[in-house]
Length: 477
Image 1 (cartoon, helix red, strand yellow):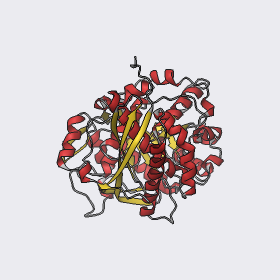
Image 2 (tube, one colour):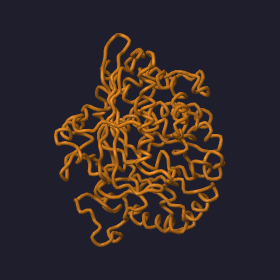
Image 3 (spheres, one colour):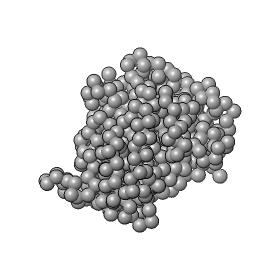
Image 4 (cartoon, one colour):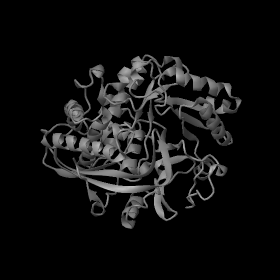
């Protein structure tokens, strides 16, 4: 049974925003760009509870270019500046807000965040990034101040989730019972992303192109090193080329003892469901893809976000679940997507913990009438080891999702960009999740699984704090 805590009234006293650059150990292509470096945003928030106690909480997330807004006219730097603006808007609103429960802090300011972001030229997915980071940091501060873990706090509804005008479709829903019934898992399968530039076998790598750092580079090497059995396969919108690449991938995956499962990421490469169906039919007509087709768990966001929720996808979702990701840009997006035949939605901490919890409640409600039809997946970009990774995993575990897309450990050199003492603190606090190898502390995957029991300590999934002195202060617009 969850320990009962009353939802506290919280006031945000201050927000400090920092940045930390990093480089990828190997390039990763998604959508219209190829990543070779990035910047992580890290927040430190100070709160005061209704009883006068004060505390700090933390959150971190990549300032990801060309995902929140894929407008090709914008540079990566302009994309990152958009996300800084979203943080600035949310900070101003939260610091000025009267005391409220953590959920009310989010829900009461959601429409303001969207409206102000729109006035500043921010797409909805960009604007919501600001709330997403602050809500996590506030929840971390609340957990630390009252001495509760994230899992205990959420199962006890310490956040104060309740019916609210923001979510009219869940009027009368019993959030307290729903949350208390959640059973966090203690290990999660790492679903390895096979990017569009990723070599499948060593022969795919041009002479002299290997990173050569001793870590796996090809898909074949990843399977051998980590024992993974879940995969995320990206397609590029060219049916013939995609089928041929998938067949080469299947040549590696089909050799895994005991079988495997995968998701297919359409990556917004299609204008309509007919294009996706053409690929789906060609895949099933290709004998080399028989096992791979049988292993597909769902298809992720195949249609461009601008029109994805205007087109019915039932022709495909009746055969395999189709989920929304990039089109999940508003608190009611999943409701609208369901009306178009979509059967699932992704959970990402960069889109907000309360959005994930609300969508999980929707799945629970809708599945009462059609058991098992609606689902949530767990996805990420190149999420970084440390607070960002840990908070995302803790949320995924709370939701009971047994596998999560993980690729940051593959494309980034672990915690190598951090000071040695900071790396050591995270390793000491989370020895089940991290290990020291190849010169740095990095994510540990054994038998394809991430062990996450240590995320159940006090606070929102982190027993270590960042090294604030090593970071630069974020320059907001």
